[in-house]
Every structure is written in structure tokens, then in C-alpha cells.
Image (cartoon, rainbow, N blue to C red):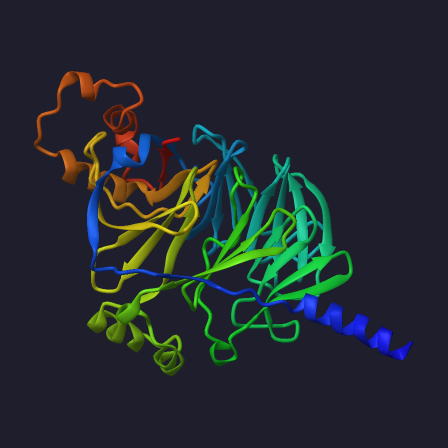
Length: 385
């Protein structure tokens, strides 16, 4: 009887700490090609976010754009700004205090069906608001995670390299039960980057993705929040060696080393599209590159440059998020104006192209007088089926 009981306990322990074999993908960053936007996308949409003078947006961080609107986190003021799908300002949920229904530190947020879930990791609580900003409920948590995601079955918590539950960087919580899901690399404890993406849910496949910022790993969860797969990129000579990562820590000297060797510090973004994946890669000292992977992760293309054969706007292309398999970009209005003038200043534009109602030129004309204010532009790149 004792032996049977021991076997049951051992099975539970092993299942709780299951480690997955990583799906390693070797990438040759020197074997590149240029692609046209039309090879991947079917159109671009431009949305102007006009920030009211009474509602400053100092340091925009995480952005979510979905069927409910556009939600922007201000990491400096710890506020959440809400816009409708056309970019009109609707509401601000302010950092207001430590009391019931309030929060001080907006560390992360998630848009659920008809609700906004906010993580205050200083006060160690999760607060729910409706989409109009009205308080609904709050719950205490016992930890200080960097990122959270409420799946259909459990709350996922990401601690990066600052573990609080034993030595796990990812922990799941179902009611009062805790499940350690992925162990931290002990040599990197204390080396943490500020993640602006956190968990990303693909509404098409229902899978959840999390890139780990002191590695080249992406953890894939199923809809219930259980780990389904782990992906690890290998950039060969452009990998940031673990020993050097430990040696430099967060010191600025690491950038000198990375730049001298054109190394990749981490993945800028990893986004699920409709039928494939797009990873954005920054080799320090070189121009940004992109990796387009097939759905099965068996074939890939390294893209050295996207050629805009839609409207010929030559702006920075740095995808930060996605919705329904389409890419979301975000930039301040001054940068957008500078890129627009660099792309089209002094050039002849046909009247048919200039007067296209949903084109970039009419978008610029309508908002021209507001670009020098503290506003922002959201660009949606609609991916081909």
C-alpha cells in the first residue's frame, strides 16, 4: 500500500515538472532575400490615435488592438488608454491609489470577453474592469509576476529570471493549485529585460505564445494554458553566448560587444499570422531582419528588406502585436510624419493614388496638423489568406 501511494506521488510530481524537448530551428542570417509586401500582405490600414491634452501618454508600452478597440499601456504613468477601432479616444483607466478597486502599478493587462484584466504586481492583485472602465472585481495573488494571461483553465504567470515559486519562470494557477511549468535558467537569475509583449494569444488557432527575453525561445501553450511545444532559434555565430550574457548582465557594455559582433540579443517579436509565423530579429549594428516560417516550422525565409509595392511608404517596419493573424505596428506621429516626408517629399504623386480614400496620402492630409503633437499612429498590415 505504501509503495502504491509513493508511485502516485512520484507520477504527480513528474507530470507537474514535465520538460519538453525544444524544437530547435537553425537560422542562417546571411542567406537573405528581399520580399514585396504583396507577397505576404493584401493591404495596409492607418489609424490616427489623437491623444487629448488632458490625457498625456508619456511612455507607451504594450498595445492591444482587437474587435473591442485599441488599448495602450502607459508604463510611465501606469494608465491604460482606450480608443475605439477608428482611433477616437474613449476612456482612460487611471492609476489612482492602493484602495479597493484601484491600482498603483500597471505591470500588464489582458483584454477578455467584455472585460479588462489589470495586473498590479506591487499590490499583488488582479483587477477587472468592464470595457467602459467601470470596476468589476479584484483578487489578491501571492506573487509579483511580470506578465499574466488568463486562459480557459488557469492563470499563467511569467516571472522571467526572478522566480518566486521554487525555481520556475512560468507558473500556472488553477484556483488554489499551483503548477510549475518551466524552470528558470539559474545562471540568468536577476537578468531581466522589460517585456512589452508578454503572452500573445492567436485567436485563429487559440494557441498562446510567450517569447523568453534572455534566450531565443518561444513557449507555445494550448487554449487551456498547458505547454504544447517549445521553439528555440539558433543563429550560429550570431548567438549571444551564455557566458557573455552572464558576464555583462544588464550593463551597457554588452551593447559594445553585441555591436562589434553583430549578435542577436533576443527576439524582438514572434507573431502568429494566418498560415505562418513572422519573427523580427535585430542584429545589433545591422538593419532589422525578419524570419518568415511556414506553419509547420520546417521551412523559413530570412528577409533582409520589405519592398513596399502598395503605397511606397518607406517607414520603419517593427511589428509588435497581431490580431486575427494580421500584424500591428505602432509609432509616434512625429516619426510617422518624418518618414512620410522622406518617402514622398518633392515627388510627383498621381491624383488617383493621392485621392484614394483609404490610402496613406488622404490619411496624412486629414491629420497633417496634428502630427507634431503628442499623438500616435497604428498601422494594420492585413495578411493574405
